[in-house]
Structures are given as structure tokens and as C-alpha cells.
Image (cartoon, rainbow, N blue to C red; front, side):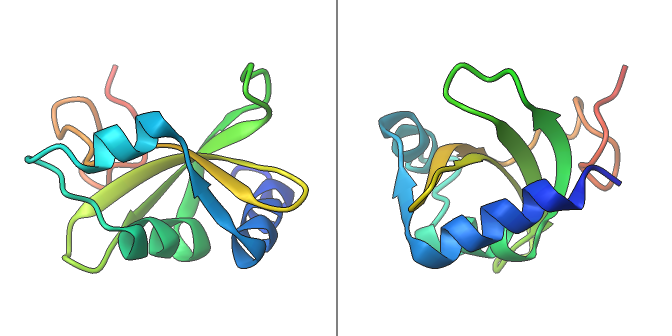
Length: 107
């Protein structure tokens, strides 16, 4: 399992405030996705941290996966900051690119 401390930082930051980047909002509002704020919150507070991006130019970020409210899997890339959690993007993963649990990339 990926470092639990990062997931704790994400959850603490989310408890303070969640801010969505323009890119995240654009991705969430695509007609074939329509991902709600509530679904994103559920993913970052209850989901599994599946990939780590410590060298992300926007700050240390990570990919979280969770089967959310509507029963579909959602991926969220986020970066914890001192007083908020930045949501970088959110999407419904493509089954051709991920395993059956949407936690490991296919090679």
C-alpha cells in the first residue's frame, strides 16, 4: 500500500476546504462524466491512494480511487496544501487502461 501519511494529509486538508482547479471542473462537467462535488469528496475522504506523484510541479499530489455514490469508480488527482485540498482532476477511468478494480494500470 502506498504511504498512508500522504492519505492522512489529503484527508486533513479536505476537512478544511476543497478547491477545484479549472481543469478539474472542466473534466467533471463533461457530459459523459458529470462527476459531482459530493462524489469527489467521497473519493478523497474514503478512497484508496493508488499512485503517488511527489515531483508534480503543482506540488506533491496523488491519485485516489473509489467506487462512489452512483456505483461507478472515480479517480481523483489531488494535492494537499496547508489550508485546503487542491483537486487537480477527476475522471471515470477507462476499463481498457486499468485492471478490473481500477487500481493498477494495464501494461
